[in-house]
Length: 206
Image 1: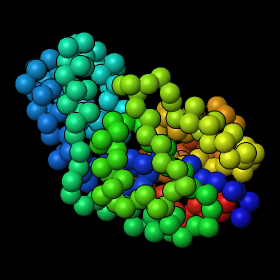
Image 2 (image 1 turned 90 degrees about the vertical axis):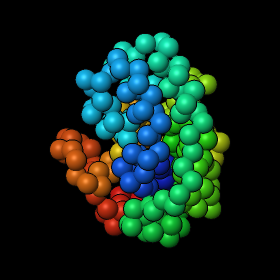
Image 3 (image 1 turned 45 degrees about the horizontal axis):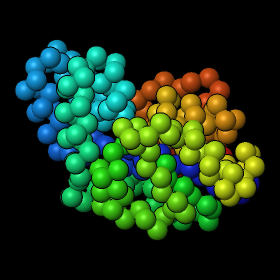
Image 4 (image 1 turned 90 degrees about the horizontal axis):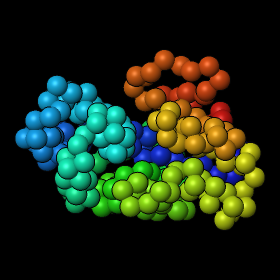
């Protein structure tokens, strides 16, 4: 095993947001429907909320400042209190004798509740929740901090996630090895980008 550390994303990388999202985000969807200004986009927004940071969605769909503030205030309080099942193949990750880090973007209360519901605390050397509503820090910044703090060489580190515009892009910009996790094969392969659908396939890149 050549790699010394793996940095994981959370949503749609360790579990499927779609298994909890309609329940978790129901108050947000109700707020948006009551506001009425985004009704023509609601199907797309419901899907994108499962995959992308809310702030990016609000910007792309030109939410009003008032609606954005109300939505963020609501999302900051949301937590998920029912059980969450990780992907079945995540059990292989738990067995890996390698330093593992979790770096996720989102609202801290919400993201921490997911970590708690899945019992992930002991799976990772460090867990970082990047909150774009209160900080300008990005996943890329956290990746750099981890590498410097633990004195890894770039070639020692692998980043794995599902979002091409988030952790994948950040890792590529830093010159880190990256694996794109596309559990349900929603996307076409990208030239030069390693893509897997199961953690059994991850072993070939370690």
